[in-house]
Length: 203
Image (tube, rainbow, N blue to C red):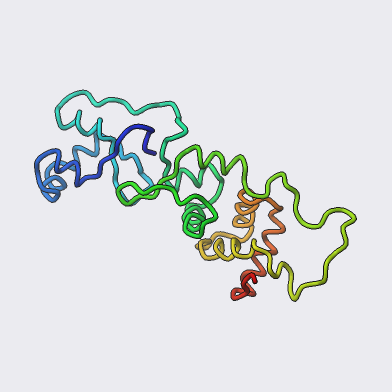
């Protein structure tokens, strides 16, 4: 997480602040630095650090603590978003790419999301509290060629299957239900249709 209002720097920036090349920084200084300054995104491939902490370390001054309180504008990693939403990291990235979730912002090559967007999605997932399916007493329409043909949720199911990466269908269905409404059982059926009719597209 990058705390609100706290600029982040990568190791290239740190080497520049220290007045050495990146290779020299990594060879001579990085190991000691990393024992004193926490990585803001430990679950990311990119190491990012709080600039104020970096500058204090380089100046030999006491390193200031990071804010303890959560702020709506904190920037969260895919792993942190996944934990809040109860889904996998792969699903977060797939939804952001497909447009089913906010694309977030990119900081030094890492895609991050404001906390307020994530909490809004968690508390107001599409479809929650809006009902779904045929209302009581409403006549049933003509039978389709196969279940859920033309259902826009099939695109979501296809994206989830692509990002599943070995995750069980039940777990994926539960994640989709939490994010988009409907029941896990409904999403299991949609996942089955998406898997058996991968080329079906909405008109």
